Image 1 (cartoon, rainbow, N blue to C red):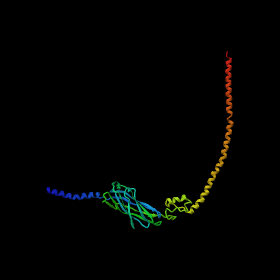
Image 2: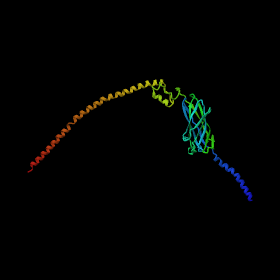
Image 3: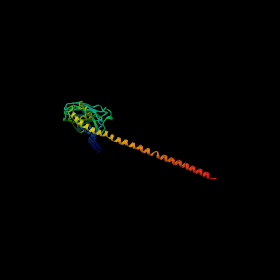
Image 4: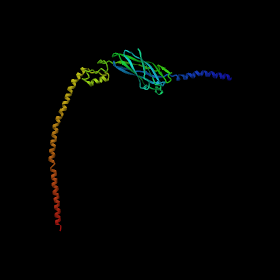
Length: 290
């Protein structure tokens, strides 16, 4: 009876070991992941450079210490010329990248200190892709992020494509004035004529319409006649005010000169007469007394 109980216990234990192991293995081998990773839509002018951020949202099963991904795009429209660190990877090593016919492979990793790892629940920019715009105005290309790899502190637990990718579209903006580059928009003939209107065009890389020499010529004649009538009333108004201001002070002194001498003279005469009258009455009373 005792042997049978022992054998039954051993069999149950052997059956439960795989079950228990299968329950804990998924937690131990959970791969680093995130809710999303990718880029947004972007645009730029020909012969300029545009920085496009790569963002990650809500990291999980980390902390994350290394990120590798591919960026596919049309090389005839844009090219990656530089990759910089993002807002949540500022303390990491500088990113490395390699260009191919299909696009670019990017890799960025921490320096080895655990405090630099991206914790769970973090969202932000992991890298900045600097594109050189080489295509023609009006052309577009998709920017796709794929083949994502996220590594944790162990370096052995790697998640492959464990975050859905969000792709963007890059569009080369059509410039109406067809300037060759953003730096060459203020031409030497336009800048001396209207420097204030040309300078915003260069600063914003052609966001508004650049004013051509014909437009500046139409603005100058309309500005000069509007300024001349506004100045003439301003100069005429002091002339009308000056005679009235001169007449008012002339009447003021005459009124004051006639009024000032009379009151002080009468007051003095009445005061002196009163003094003499009082003195005379006092003397009469003294003489009348025996």
